[in-house]
Image (cartoon, rainbow, N blue to C red):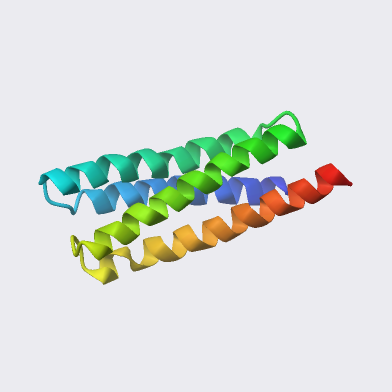
Amino acid sequence: MTNLKKNDLKDRTKSFAHDCIKITAQLSNDYLSNHIKKQLIRSSTSVAANYRATCIAQSKKAFIAKISIVIEEIDESLFWIEFIQDENLLLPESCKSLLKEADELTRIFISSRKTANLNLNN
């Protein structure tokens, strides 16, 4: 992965975390919403932080381990965004771009892990 792509993904994951935080600010302060806020903030910021760790991984195995964490966290973020919609806590339009970005990032990271695994085994 080139440096430019790494920096683009660093920016995208960080923006994703910021956008998730912004969407949690639109939720009410009831028990369920507060729980979702904490979970979505934790998982989305973990995506950004752990992706940065993949960029400085010291081996292919370390990269694969770290990118696997990123995949788990982006999937959890996706779950919480879907849950917000399932519970009708926000209008579907409010979550549309976040759902799309989470899906795109998931695909990118899964593809990166597959490539890294192939390179490790060759």
